[in-house]
Image: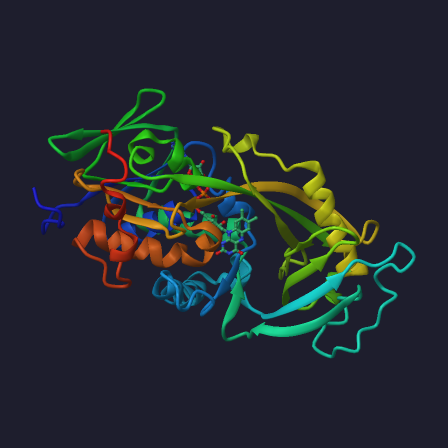
Length: 387
Ligand SMILES: Cc1cc2nc3c(=O)[nH]c(=O)nc-3n(C[C@H](O)[C@H](O)[C@H](O)COP(=O)(O)OP(=O)(O)OC[C@H]3O[C@@H](n4cnc5c(N)ncnc54)[C@H](O)[C@@H]3O)c2cc1C
């Protein structure tokens, strides 16, 4: 059998992993006419794809290996937003992005007592902020609510393009004579398939077929979501902070106001063991406390009493050893594809990854982005594949 879809036949594809990468892949595969089953072990967007910032940048990856993927994906986010009414359904909006330096105030000088002479700093940023630079405009930076985006895309894929969603844990990809035949779930269910896409995020490192070939590890990062009493005071400015604690080391947390009125803050990352169950991922109390401290130093609107804490959470960035995503067919296993290792840019790069993988699976090559740089074949010889 060759790899390309035969005229008159419908290719059966099982996509494993209901994060943004798996969902985007399922969406574009089904839109191109494949019969798609999405397998997710917990719930859709339960991990990083639901808990990320959702920040998008056109040109921040320029000069690096994901430049063309990022540019294509930024534009695809814009067109998907037009198609799916993104501003209403998942908080898509262009925004201005600032880099700001904050040096923690003395306890006697709370946020709100500062009035900045820096005209670029929005008035709600009333903590000890200085040195602002505009690092993104409404042409080059935007945002989505990542969980709403992922779930909206999957709902559309189900309702319009017939994607079937199965909750169950992928246990094994069955390979016969060097090509994929089916997947087996933990509870024994078997799903026959012509192709399989493994989009397991940081759990790629726990799936032996992939782990025997390359390493995907998890970097744990924390976030909080605040609901200020006066959401109208918060403007559409994403903030990349250079944050200096009193007597502590500098940090670089990020602040994303959302059109829903919420304000999302993230930072505090470190390599950590990925628990098997995504629902078991909890934030370290000290990291969460630190983010609250950052919040109150950024703005009096984000201090305790002025904002309700809606979420305190953590999730894992999926990282590869060379820092480049791994996207393509596994060498030696026809019909078995991987899409993982998107690190801190998975929300940005989800759509173009999904569209490119759909082309690769159904047409044998991707036209939207050249995927050769991302091929898992680059790891051949470094570890042996177990099937
Ligand atoms: C704090 C934080 C902030 C971030 N902010 C941004 C941002 O602003 N912009 C940006 O572009 N990126 C951001 N990212 C990165 C982005 O969130 C990730 O790159 C992206 O979500 C990875 O998506 P994924 O689908 O590969 O993995 P995940 O979202 O982890 O999804 C993997 C899915 O696979 C499922 N799964 C695993 N094993 C199995 C199995 N055996 N069977 C079935 N299902 C399985 C899991 O349950 C999970 O749902 C951020 C990440 C973090 C942690």
